[in-house]
Image 1: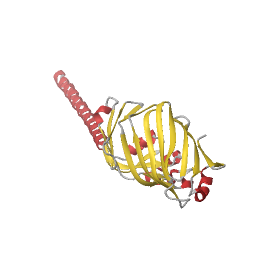
Image 2: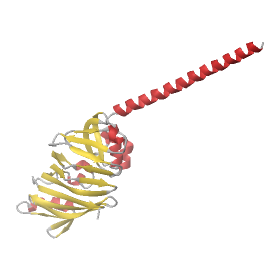
Image 3: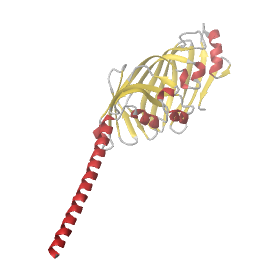
Length: 284
């Protein structure tokens, strides 16, 4: 009797152990399956995920449209959004519904995933007009970009919001920069924007001219300077930019002969008239 009871208890314990082993095995398999799914998601995450990150980093100012590939290697179009109501833009969800300027050409990117495990960014950005890729490196709170340039054919800027939607300008853009570093709202480096073949739907004078904007940053504040390279519409001015107050800029606009008379209506819309000059203020 006693031997039979012992055998029965031993069998019960073995059965329980078997059930426990089976349950543990199922849990382990479920965890392994979840990890495998996460690994597949991480390596095959769609390129549209990059728009979410870009939206957050730029506070809705820059978006990614028509994205293809994965978040690690893909292509898409950059949209410079009208940020009059960035919250509404983010709530809209779809990039196609965001008002803004779609830059011509497609951008491509490649991100190395393994350096991210130790908090290091190692990425490469390309564009149809770039002679060579731009390398992006950095850690948390810091981003560095190698020198580069970007050339864009004439672009309509009226979808950028005020005051662009009033003036409705167009022009070919050339962006260039030297070694640039961004860290916690600070900008170090040099960048320039040239606007060629500038025109406006509000005047028959074409072209209005060619202009250059230089940005020099050496810390929390960047100096901004605008000069006229050529053309009957003269624009000269300067200001500052910082992460807290944004752009504060003042410029003077004037017209040269023989187009002075035809440019008067446009000058009246650009700002406050003071004799032959028009004063333009942004953020001041």
